[in-house]
Length: 188
Image (cartoon, rainbow, N blue to C red; front, side):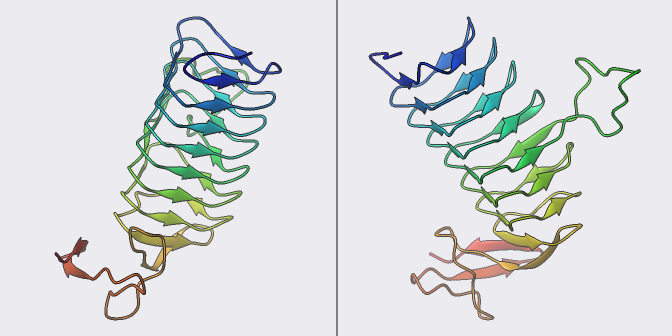
């Protein structure tokens, strides 16, 4: 299905009352539910599900086999690696459904989520943070933090460009940072 403003592969389903921004591409076997909003210049890879009322910012890249459930908000320029997982209920039970009672998860601008990582609901992934492949996030992640492991723990800091900062909080790209308490701040 071709749209003047955006592209949807014919194998995908876009429900009524969905907002899709200009330049967005929705590839094979995706489903975007009623009430969802996708910004401009996004890319949804094969087999991506977007729940109703989910908000996805501009320039977001969601790779194959990712489900973005109700309760998740993704800000601009976020990368979601293949098969990363979002949860939206802390204690799911088949015989006690939690319809409409979802934990809020926010992925801040510029963050990257590695392949097969899991983001337990109720947490915020900070700006430009990097969650390593396979990590399980069970608490908030600070801006620019590099987290890895099960459960995920901070192992360093990353630059806006995504590279790990050295011990002096400098990046090979030339950007420099400093700590203000527990927060990483870019030097100007």
